[in-house]
Image 1 (cartoon, rainbow, N blue to C red):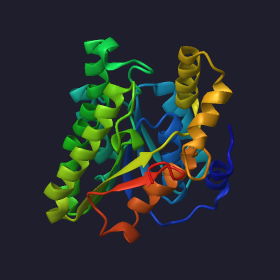
Image 2: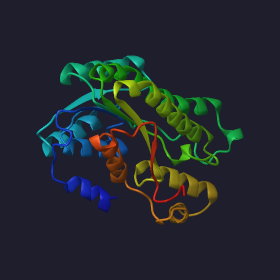
Image 3: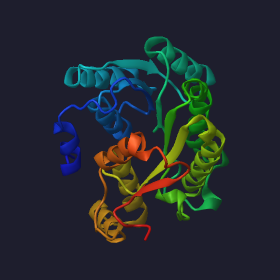
Image 4: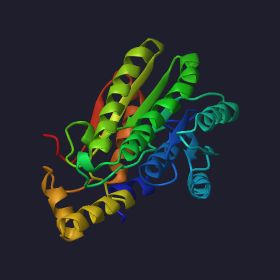
Length: 276
């Protein structure tokens, strides 16, 4: 689905706001990661794109390089749960571009949907915690030394509004997003002395394939139509609507900009007025 904010990002003229900056983005092949890399490339950043789907990564990187040829992309197939993959991602990025200025941790998953805690498989709970928390921590661990060396850097982790409140029937996912916020604040305290900021973006329900799967699962479980589920989600927000991936990309772009140099350890909530 093409939305006004996505179209705005796609049609914006290139800028040099991030020229000379090197970004690493996980989960970069699609969804939020693709939107974020699009905006970072538009601003002139060189980007290491990481995800498990190498073909999708290459296709997206080709698009970025075609649209914004004044900078370049590096594709590194990466499973964020593989320590050797993550270490290799950082090594290849530093070898190609000389260092890392920006890290955006977008890779993640949803875990069990519409499942009461007593019915959640323990392994499924463990899996979503590892993907969303360990998968964020590991990339931070290996990228941080390059930022310390430069005594500057921006780390942005993708949490979610489910990390601001409890989320009924989504125990694993909510727990993981609370943990990402805790990790973000701890790293901000540790890394501030080096001029590195660490923040989280908390999206609410966002248009895209992942949300479509969630809506369809919820509709089937409740015996209602997907349209009714969409309407219910939207009605819970002040603005009465979902958000778009471009909205998240814009928040990330602000946090990695010089204008946010004194913002660290905080959450930027992009939720159309849900948590108010």
